[in-house]
Image 1 (cartoon, one colour):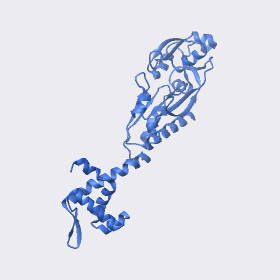
Image 2 (cartoon, helix red, strand yellow):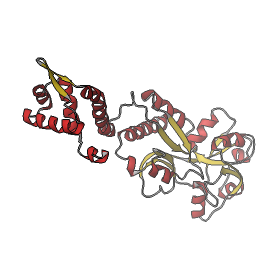
Image 3 (tube, helix red, strand yellow):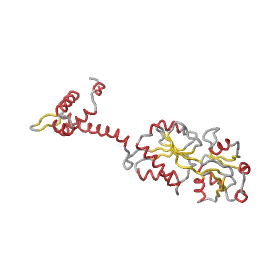
Image 4 (spheres, one colour):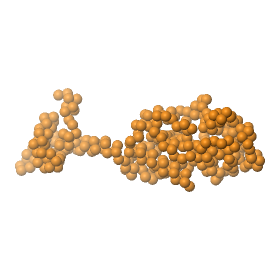
Length: 310
């Protein structure tokens, strides 16, 4: 008999009967435990004996005992049943206290700089054995493909129009403001739209050649263009550059306020009326129903709410 033919004759019910009969060492007790009629258990045992080419359970005095083959099959049968139970229970239930699942999160650093540290802390507090990978949103990230392939669980960032074809949830809105050094002339005299456009601006490096960031995309829609004289791929370093120059950073208030706590910086209203920055978390349909990723998205939402309400 070929192995594949043998495998095709085995189902999970037979494995359950095998393990119960060998454990109970009695067809009648096994039937009670399984909630089956005794003739049905006896029929299943006959099939198992045929498949194994061994009696599996034999009489020894007044009792039944597993054969050597039956004894060797007890632990593998238990392992198969445990794995089968976990196969579906893990899909429906997630216990962060015992899980060792790795969470992969792709996020921009345009958010509140406390967001990702607090998110990692919240995950590790509730799921101490789960590794966490924070991945950048960059020109090389291709996050839509990563979500589709399961390489990333959730993507967090801001988009004027969120990508189509993905599940999404809004996290928070943030007012667009300007961050400058106290030495910037606009701190003393103020500025109008034209003066703001002619100022020297610093902006993040585009995600890909020819791309425009959120601010420049919105300016283009208004028929306006600012003077960007510096770009930096590391957004969290830009406030330090602003503090020691006359550059202007236009970004979200939450991001700017954090850096004002430690650097000589001033927040000014933007003379251009921008809509709020809206931050989302995005995920793919493949992970929409998964218990672990549902739990992760809830943690992301709670951390965002906590920071927004401070």
